[in-house]
Amino acid sequence: MTTTKHDVPVSPSSMSWLGTDIRRARKQGPAALTRRQQARLADSVARARSFSPYYRDLYRGLPPRVDDPTLLPVTDKQQLMARFDDWATDRAVTYERVQAFTDDPELIGQRFLGQYLVATTSGTSGRRGLFVLDDRYMNVGAALTSQALATWLGPGGTLRAATRGGRFAQLVASGGHYAGFAGYRRAMHEGGWRSRILRSFSVHTPMPELVAQLNAYRPAIVIGYASTIMLLTAEQEAGRLHIDPVLMEPAGETMTAADTDRIAAAFGTTTRSVYAATECTYLSYSCAEGWYHVNNDWVVVEPVDAEYRPTPPGEYSHTVLITNLANRVQPFLRYDLGDSVLQRPDRCPCGSLLPAFRVQGRAGDILTFPADGSGAPVRLSPLAFSTLFDRTPGVELFQIEQSAPTVLRVRLRVAEGADPDSVWQAVHRELMLLSADNKLGRLTIERASEPPQQSPGGKFRTVVPLV
Image 1 (cartoon, rainbow, N blue to C red):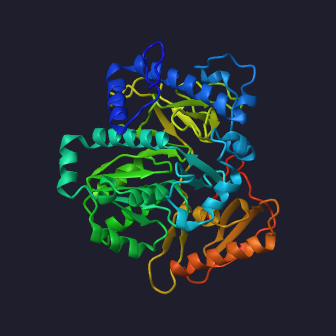
Image 2: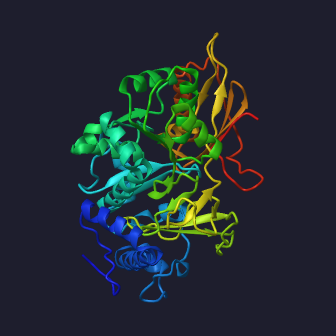
Image 3: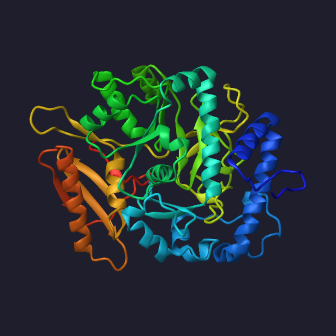
């Protein structure tokens, strides 16, 4: 185990060690959290310089020890994906190998090179990312999630969950190497206590079937994409879904206070949300006051303006930079996540010592379609479309605009070397299957000649609902 001059350990060896260190850091206060952050940042930068050709070149000329993130150049998904083979610290991790691995659905959740979890995402940028996650990253995420659950539930809630079998329902995007589904599949492959209490439910399942499955399972805790949980909230309000969870945990998309209040009222339970990304799944967890608290012993979060200068607390930023202090195989150092955040200027009333934020980015835009026949309208979350494009080869960037109740206009940027007509045929086929699965009736899918568009404010939306 490596320590610094302040005796701050930076190389955790076990889940039990991690849990103890996380609890100790929060009891010791802000100074202890900052010491850990600085020590782990210095360690992450040193390792990246030693083993990643990309970072070795990028950090040439920086001081020997760096524990101040503002000294580092900014990175983003496009830059890192362009230098994929040089980015990884394990020289056996190459784009060709990872791409071949993700092309095989039978390998979802299996260990890439016998060591790593692979996760793909299109994210809010619409660009596909291939991410390799090591065990240290996974263990830190699991330990921080356990800490959040203990805080949210308290002794009473934990007991109520246990009396219901401790059943977790995880709403995941299935059919691809997405972080949630790949992590679930690994848990099933490798056994252990998680495999006994966790069950995944695909967000691609037509809503009547998903409702029936959840009614039969009777989960104690529901975790999943915010837009899908909002659809399930409407089903609970209508009386078709009738589950009684101890905790609802929406994630992946921005939630308003009205959203979380509605979920809590519909299910009669505690609702807490997560603001995170595949690049850092443990970034932050919400509190009873509706603020997201950053786990700043394991991640650095910097709200910045368009020139990457610090945004003062109390003001929304142009974007936010994150530094993941756990993943060593693919270091995310001063990485532009693309969301607008506001840091609370004072201590949160909930009592947490962790920095508190609000988030404007990643709104879940739900598309509504008229039903075929006399049924109720059909509502689909953006996830249903983004995962479809993510698993279609040759798509570099995409955008769907609902131009009429039954018309979808598809804008594509095709990857270099791919045949545009073949890619379009594959996209059209997948969209028609999605339409049939959800009984959308007569749906028109148009191929746009223009590329994906940004909004007047500069934001990019992968799904644009009918106004």
